[in-house]
Length: 138
Image (tube, rainbow, N blue to C red; front, side, top):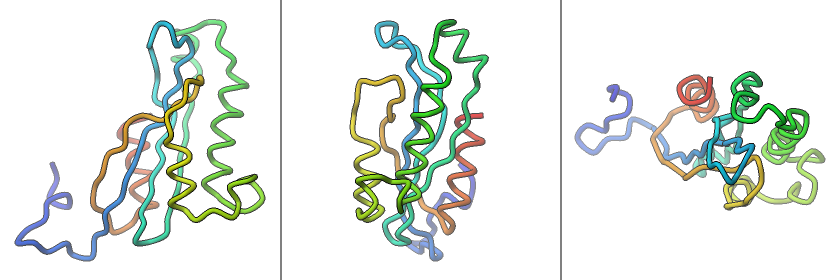
């Protein structure tokens, strides 16, 4: 654990609580195998919801040579659209960042699924999104 993740003496040094969940691709649900393909981050204090995705097609095709790569990419783009808000979010366009995050992390039995939610502290949720992508996905 690095120093920036430890609170000393009860001080938070202007860090805010954030939540995150991995986006997993489960090409064959009956086998339970998955690869991480993205990370969703929500920080209520900063009204931030963001996602970064990275699909390793070679790894996906090792799990399932018949995987619908185009369909998985479309599902990941849809998550990106909901996070971005506006017209790209469809019916979620009018929802606040927290509602959009909660909708995206709701359990589902599709090929692209959210993992469990974890928490942390950050001074920059966008940078945290990128850091988690590098650490847990790529």
